[in-house]
Image (cartoon, rainbow, N blue to C red; front, side, top):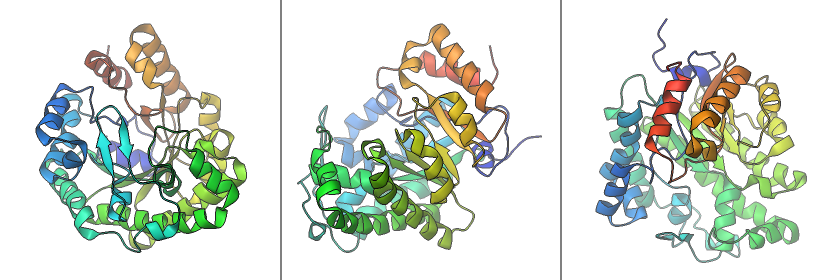
Length: 340
């Protein structure tokens, strides 16, 4: 029996075979058409904030590979920009912004003129997607966005942000509260514009010890999910507290997320246990996709054997790497869908 949107059905708790598939950062530099589009845009932020270009970037991997999910092309620091931080991206050097020292450096409300192009892109993608393809919106987790804002870039080990967590947690609470409200509004607006699902990327959650993880990752996520479900009670929310390790289970059980995305360091026995809380998404090592060959075949087979009989979405444990060969992605799609 065919399922109208296999990925959405899996996130709603159905066991779907073959497992639905999408890849984090699937719209990116490994695609020649994306590299051409970025050159045409003139810059990364220009690409993110020009609706027709962001929509094109979102659709490119769907046309090429037929993934079950299309994730909006945007960036987690759009929220920081909307809250008044000057965000820039330099080729090969990542994001840069003035270091944030206190909550007064964040506007009380997001600038709607910054956010409007994102929602226009959602609407444009929605109008162009195949009917069976699930559209995912996303945002960065408040801790992760705070880490970039406090340290001023991603080139550090986020020593300033981790220092604030230890030495001035009340200030970090205030910063994260403001980011949490903006994040919830941003995700709700994406759902309003037509996204089927949203994902919260807390990429630097693994930097925090357990008590701080609960305070600065879990509590804000719970707040965001509650706000989303107050507006969209049935919306699926995927949480990705990367490198959470033993804390994944508590995060999944207590934050209210619908599904849990896991990184490649999670043993498949642990991943299987996590499925008792709900759908799991992951967790192929992006380096294995680069390697291809027998290593890729074995890894895909092992993941599907361990997780594929319960609600599950096949994905990577982190974003696809720029050097990934297109042929290996094509091979992955065939393997997951049961082809030779």
